[in-house]
Image (cartoon, rainbow over all chains, first blue to last red; front, side, top):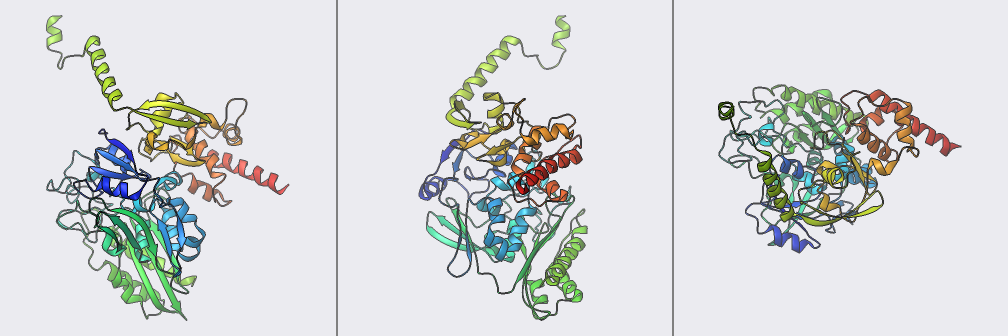
Length: 334
Length: 191
């Protein structure tokens, strides 16, 4: 691990001023915020991340989960994943989020990992993790070793010729289906970005993973009020039963009335370069009866643009079946 | 003999050189060291450590609390599990200097020979280990699990213990040990 200066922010303005001096935004930056450290310290040990300064943001006043007057929920940036998963409002109104969080990592890691950290969680692509290998995300212009290499676990949606790294987060998939908003405080003031606009497709610049600019600090995430009568669910498929990243996952939020789907929100995990909201699938579901044939059409629509690599062709069918099964389960209980 | 030395590939570091190198490394470490106060098992420790020092390395190398083990050093095996303010965490991914003011508990603080925690007694009674390397981490997770929202079934216990890997495969007896403590605690509550 490269040496760094460890600093602590007691006020958001201090944190923003410190990080505004960085050359790039958070991920891969020379000045990095640190909260749980589960992802960052791991990557610092591998010399994938080599910040010269860390700003400990654990003491900032962003550790609350609060009900909003409109019926929605505000989740602080440093709320721990386990606290969020077990919060009574989350369990009651946003079951998909609780299930996604509890399907991720291990209890120890969930006690450390935070909301904002999870939003910025970096890929598990083995070439990104290995500094001896080319990787356009880690070292722009060096090439992508995954396209011709071991790519079984990598993305089939949203890829480019420069990067096929999958977003590893479960929480982000649930947040995409819940249409969360990310609230950011930065050198130019405050702004909010929808989860769909927060993460960037790799395109020509896979090193840029989010819209964050140097100095930008995530303060909290808000969820809109739950759609009345909705049922939600997170289904995760992986190589082993626990403590493993998704090969394919589905977050579904469905409102049905007399067997007819009146509102559908669908996001997929494990298959996209970013948390993959599928408005195509939602379009196939809305106004239709909750039947296997309709679910199948939605799944076909969600995966229509899939571009499998040499080893992950199975993900196309796996993701379809994952979504169909999730829709079946969530409408059975509705 | 001279011939042998010159053809033996890269020069072997002499002990004199080695000690000089170690001195240089030590002074580099001292240069970057920062003062840190940690509370471990009810005791306060004032230390000077390199900011890169993980909580795990700090416990083992500076405080000589070697119960917490280094397995993968990347948060994947759970051998380093400790409690921070009563919650279990992977100490290998914690930078020690960030945990000042927190109450850290290691296996040494959970129980000692003659005064074992019920989970430790149950691990002995149920033969819940083979080589023992992962055991301290398993016990730290199991103790924390007792106050987490875990359902009564074995499957729930397995899910909540999935952050602790056992290379010997003692899983079945680990689950039995944990369940025996949970069941006797429940019986006491019911009684």
